[in-house]
View (cartoon, rainbow, N blue to C red):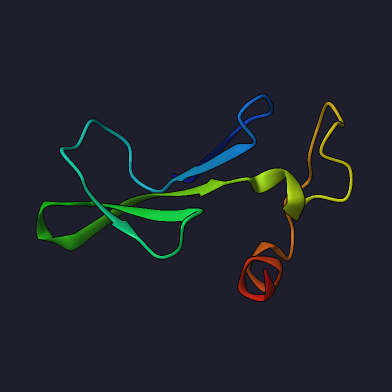
Length: 75
């Protein structure tokens, strides 16, 4: 199960990879990208701050996520 949520006011995107509540260790890849790891190094989720710059029209009511990784990598 992958659940993607986007907070338009905070311009924060969260990609949840595992269901349930976990005590997580946060690893920052950059100032804007963090990984949440549970026990056993299970990747629970990925947080992207300032995510509005990844979208062509961040003010839209719906956002289609495709080709996200190349845009993050080139940012």
